[in-house]
Image (cartoon, rainbow, N blue to C red; front, side):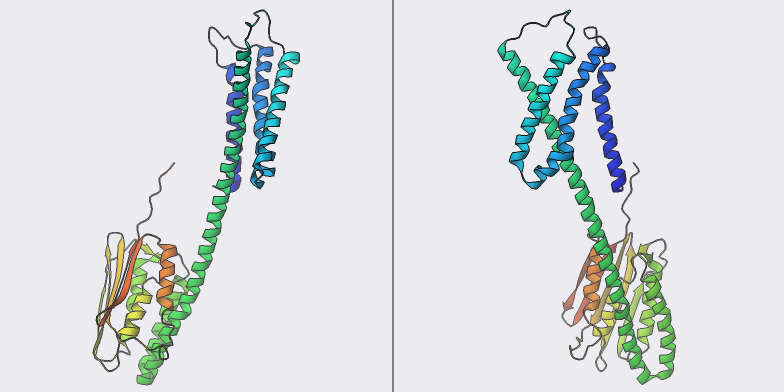
Length: 354
């Protein structure tokens, strides 16, 4: 609901409540209290109108000018004076302007009766002032909370956009490094790899800018990327891939799994030692899991210029923004292997119609 609609709804509620208070005597009758005539109703209106004076004096002026500025003592003092003036004005109106019908003179009252009557009226006005404070402060808190959430949403969107912009050149940088190596080994195959790379980059540039893509498109992208990586791998590197088949109807944020796949090839391949890379992406209900296991040959900092560390740090932040509380991610070295596992719940929250 927009702030404009919220404001209109608030004033509609004000109007309905005051309408009930003002017009209620016109519809409530009993054998002992028949329907009010004109003068009686005008006399009745004085009280709710006085309540409105106390309520809106606080709502529009005293709360903002005094209470919100931490001047509680002055706020209470002004309210005491306001209630005293309003009660005196109501008494004068009853006494001189709208005198009751004396065909049935009221019974004589003792001092204690007058004191109880006065105390009850004072309490009513205090409750009206308190209701004004509660309603005003609640509305202010609601607006502040709505603004905070909007600012948080905009900040998250800006951060997510920045992360996407980091991801595209990071992916391109890593892939070009691989093709550069391939050019030295097999120029003809490097030309074919450049063609394959253009198809992958089209997905990164256009699919990567969308909020969600079909999971099947993401799996096809991973499959093509792995095939591109196979071209330049030495014969002693074993690659095993298992990607879910027949996925349809599921949507996922783009490029969620490529950092794990990149990491597996980057640190799992040795040019002179037996090495392996295992990649599995499987679906179980609404949960998709990407797992990688690879032999571990960490690159030295002065050797690895591919932006190592950007991918995983980027991935964790994107997961926090896109799937808070709906993902499990663990990674680390176990013996001579490096294992990473990312599981994401892709179920959509249920929307209940109101």
